[in-house]
Length: 281
Image (cartoon, rainbow, N blue to C red):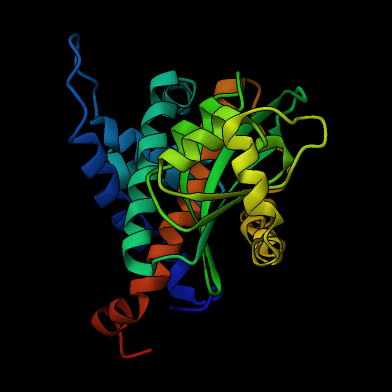
């Protein structure tokens, strides 16, 4: 893999080309809806929203710098804002995270997994919480799934976690009988930190036995490696998102996770790209 500071990773054209390939793959599986077709393909608008976060541009900056590059004509910032606030867009971006996560998993493999959550706030101090499942490989952490559901403990875990194997670590928030049952059903060995106020449930008792194993207790200490993804996003963009609505905050949060994934893919195949595009790196 290339180092994080390699200039090839910051190549905007390469980023757009890599992201576009995966976005098209996801959009090709979507059912066409009835009604008037959009002026540009929906994948172009999605790519514009993602590239805007990669280039750290405002809505007007995306209009001036990125829209002509992606859509072949200038797209007004109000149109970009309209797409940023669509519920449908957040759902498709969620599918893109899963598609990129599978791609990374096939290339890298993983040692163990971790589920965790974080919150980002906007200018109105409205917090947006999302749950994320990370795969951890020696020296690399990459997201495999994400969920914005916050009604119950089990629902976001069920949506964000694909089938897998090996240990999956989670803090005391995920010490929920139904949640642990879902993780067992998806093929994992859930190592969940016990919540002292919760005792009942077949799957919880089964998970407690696993947690008491000294090997699993020592493995749980490595779960902090899975939280590094939040540090990477905060270091890159800050802990507050410059939005006024909750939907826009959600869209930008997921777009930033996608940017992180695409850059990881570029780092993996970067040496080959460097040989093809330039002299050997």
